[in-house]
Image (tube, rainbow, N blue to C red; front, top):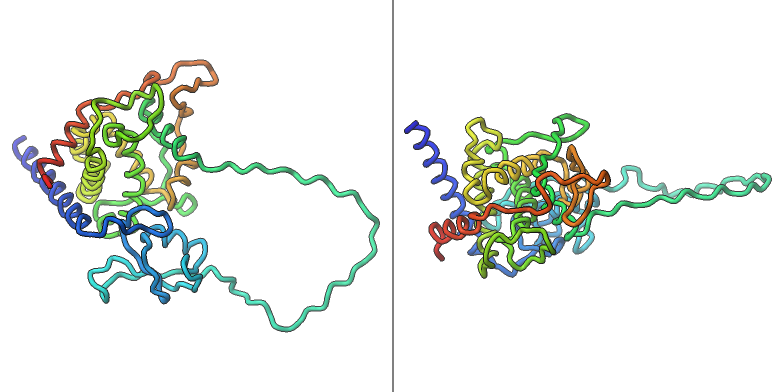
Length: 328
């Protein structure tokens, strides 16, 4: 038992040290620098080559070039991405597959096709197709709050060639800037579920996410918890039998929500999606997710009631941890 407690303490110390190192590194970066694609703060700076245009987040640029292999700024063909810079001449390289058609149009002229006279037939009316857009940010956030209110776990998708889902380990995440960028993207949105971390969010009427007095430093707390969770994912197995990841998060989110949060972030990181909106459209649950204020079609009561009650000690836990380990 003493050995287990010692291991837990050592693991937590390692997680906190990783958190502080990352926060310190990011604090030294220019706070005003943002990605020209998503307009959010740069989390993993990247440069297009050979045009050398920068100011891109790695995952945004990689996602863009998968669809079209030309620079978003100058439209020049991009052959590789430079990222993980240690200095101006030392970096990692991510190769880009060209999306240009392999068969270029030939220079000789093709004779026009011969037209035959055919009887006129009335054209069949075209079928109208409807496009299902991604949910608006407020709708997506309301849906995520409902997931926690109903305590719903997303359905597992197997790892295979068709689904393109892949398992990951703390080691593979630590070695992959792409996975880390994807993790930050999803976690930053998911933490908005917890109103004590985002007191300026308009959470809507009756959603029950307030959980305590408003805080002026909610953004600092959210950023601290973001880096803390990244450090947890780099250090321990999310599905480890010992439940270390859950133990490390329960003081901030509560055990029930920590367990659900870890399940969902694992589902996102295993998925092939580059955008959170695409994951939102495709993730499935065993029962419909009913947002606060909506009624189920069968008239039944929602699991977990109508109000999402957050872990009420979470705000205090995050604030105390941030001040204790990062007083500046």
